[in-house]
Amino acid sequence: MKRLSFGDRVFYFINYIILSFFLLVVSYPLIYIISCSFSSSSAVVSGRVFLWPVEPTLIGYTTIFENNRILVGFANSFIYAVSGTILGVAVTMLASYPLSRNDFILRKQIMFIFTFTMFFGGGLIPTYILIKKLGLIDTRAVMIIPGAVSVYNIIITRTYIKSNIPTELLDAARIDGCSDFQFFLRIVLPLSKTIMAVVALFYAVGIWNSYFNALIYLTRQQLYPLQIILREILIQNKVDAEMISKGRINVKDLAARQAIFELLKYSLIVVSSAPVFVIYPFIQKYFVKGIMIGSLKG
Image (cartoon, rainbow, N blue to C red; front, side, top):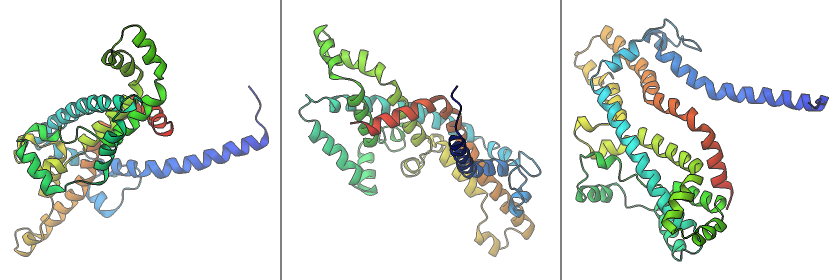
């Protein structure tokens, strides 16, 4: 092993100090939120939580999971995320591969149309009318189909395929009698696992955190995703000023509900973010490699 010079040691030491500082800045908000979620409501309201939980308790989580709809919300969000991710990755790959082929005559025109939709849209009301005409209102499909295609994901996937799968492979496959669809299934897909993992992460996180479509297009509570249910729990525990003015709630109850409300904010963040934190470490290596290759080359 080569011995480091004094200048190299100083350089690495300074780098470690700077990186440790940035690690602290990035990780502290997450640690603070988790600590608050396990602290008592009085400790959270009084601002006594700094790094570790104060007066540890699970009241925030028990309040959330006492609501029977939480499991329904988890199940719905899981269905939406898995189905939407599979459909999104499939459509993205099917669209990206032809657009990466130089012998595809209409690739520039189609890519222009895709890119155009990134900057211009019809707006909420025309979109709602379209969704209603398609019969998707109050169905599970409305949480999956409208967001099945991401132009950004198509762009990075197309760039990845074009940069990492040489045309010589296609020529060799054609000599062996391989059709375009067989080439896509047997060669392109196996060689695109990295970018597929990245795109899957994008779709899964986006669908899991999505609540606006459910807020607009769903009215049946049994179809609500987790985010909508958590939002309702938070609203139910929020104190209404009208209740105070009309004497429906006394000062003691007001203080208790306000404390619970503050505690629930942190517990809800942890509950809604936990699945993403569990999944991300398993595909983090693909994410870094795929996004760098797909965005820097071509």
